[in-house]
Length: 399
Image 1: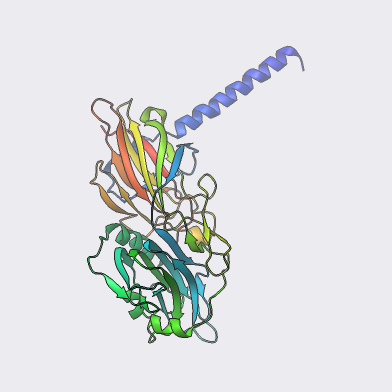
Image 2: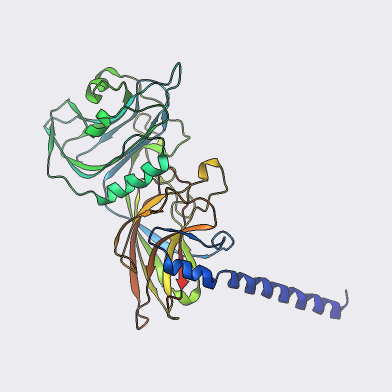
């Protein structure tokens, strides 16, 4: 190839790259119709952004995680489907102090017949003195086959709950049901039992999640059941985990002039799954999904170009499999255009589906003088949904 031909080829290549880069930048800008949809949307509402989210790769916000002091965290989701009529699906020892328990189990009995069961959680006092138990956070949903609704409502109820004044007493060697609602529920085949609790105890104890017949009280079933089911290593996990709360601090100051950015948590890569121990075997456990872990996010932002900032989320995994066709979540977000508080995502229908859909979480107006502001929100990976669920910050002209 002659030098002149080489130069022409290089110039053409550069022009092509610049055109692609320019097109990419242009694609990341909202058009007028999309901007108006955000401006007119209700909080938690579905937005149609015409594949804006799926056709772009946005700059990821860097962040650091600090493990906050928090409760001992137990999750029961392995096996998720309890296939035998009567068994213990989880058994873990806990020490005096705060405990977070997440029950996510399904009546999976279908042989020889599909039968109604009870799935309940009990705690046994393994100490020498009387145990006192007081509930700090409580969310208990009616068993259902609508996993998305249960996961979304369960987080909303957890966030909204307040500490109880009543204290329950447990004698040494005795056991009580942690949640009386679970004791009364009859669970049909393929229905999910979803309980999310935080409580304090002053004696060592042993927590068990049990499947039994609907008429037998959980503490009585505990005395007769000897079988603890093995883990399947196919679900989120089970065990006792040392991380229950993260403080997430983003790097630098987000500026609207720099375009669309996103923060991705609970992806198993940049944000690895937390580790723990499975009580029965003593083996290391992994919580795939970090379900039940609370991410308390604090980030600084400013507007050098006078634009506001819309925070949205979407089902980034919608095309992956039949299990990822819907996404539903709940968050707590600080004040912006809408008041501070708990918001179900979405709030106007059960789930978001395709990649053309976004859910509006909050809109943050710019300060009059362009000064820095702080956004606070609490995120927890939503049960029944495929992860990650990106949180996307879109500059919006609010004028």
